[in-house]
Image (cartoon, rainbow, N blue to C red):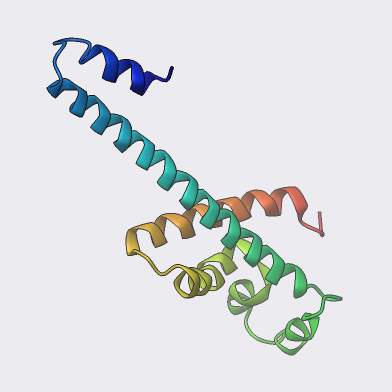
Length: 132
């Protein structure tokens, strides 16, 4: 028997009435929704992070889009980072495009997802960077 069934059977733990059940059920439902939204956002963060890492990997010197790196190697270094050289910097640009094309839900969620995906890419770069 789950906790929800036990609460429904006994009534409110403090007052013993039916009205207290709705408060407890409401709290449990709210907690469930928060956990559900967390996992949905975590999924979006991971997907955006993986897409940006894939774009970055395809733009390595011998990658399928390595020609982009060769074409743009003479542009200023500050522009190279967000275009093809730094997945942490690329997340803001490529991740934004992916987020708005695929989900485009809310500005609050967008900000949280992009910042978290940037952090996840920073971890990935530290773990898997080919030059180190």
